[in-house]
Image (cartoon, rainbow, N blue to C red; front, side, top):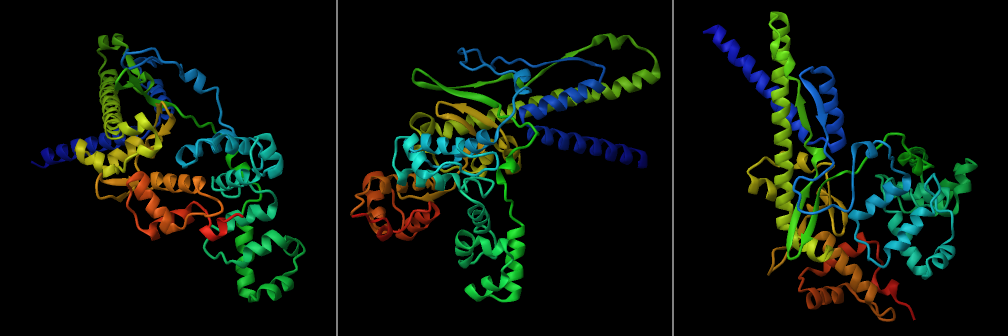
Length: 426
């Protein structure tokens, strides 16, 4: 009886360990999976070869782009590419995007803007106010401090996001940075009426900032964006093509089946068990990711058809409930995974957006509402800019969206757009 119980506990431990490993494999990116399987193959003599097919899961069309593991291993992201990646998840008017990208390309390796806004406007054949907006977008990117024009602004962009920030810090950093450089603590205390303790806290805050934020993205570690699938339209139907590199094939060496040595047989049994687990875990990973992507496409088909304004509110729980999986499983399945769409390459997490309830058609996502507000303000009469209440009315008239005035104000402030009286131009 006792021996039977021990056997059951041993089996349960093995099952739990296998389950944990399968879950870990689910959250691997394609490149991490490639490295992980190759490590196992080096130690398991039963695996003769791991075949990575750069083709497609369903041969329904000829892809325009070709990817390969070898090509991935010879590429490395630059500071500029990493910053531009972040633009995918930000609501930017299409006409402003080239100006923003030009600004990113004009940063030096430390993340500072090396040209004036006037030069920027001239180079992009646009206006000074447009480059101001573009700079503001760049300064929202990570790491904070990117897009600064001088050291004081760089530190300010970082400090304003921290606990302990106070309004006088902006004036100090933008107009009196020399006081800090000269250790003129008396001038700071007298000008802003702060105590010695507050001054000490301020100095600690400043010391915690990075004067060269661009270096934080200048790493020798290679990161890749490798799409799991391509979402495309064939006449009037949307289709998904899954790439094979996420589901490598294992070529088995059968010559070891002839061995009769007991010691070797015990070793081979453990390797056969590992092989069976690996094959099962790969199938589980592939099936789960494919199910999740199919469900995303089904729910977000309007986005693929018409673009950002049609992105629907969707949560991890929505997908988990439909697929009868745990929310954490969905989270792992979408973590660091990407899909190729007609609108560009997007992280799967992008499609999970919170929303504001509407009377007629469920919810509108926050990013869509902000895009609508931004567009209305872009189109307003600058001599008679729209108040928050007028924006609320226009949203209802133009987009059939019903939200409160305070919600408009909240999103406008999050977009760093000033109130109407500050936007007025004669």
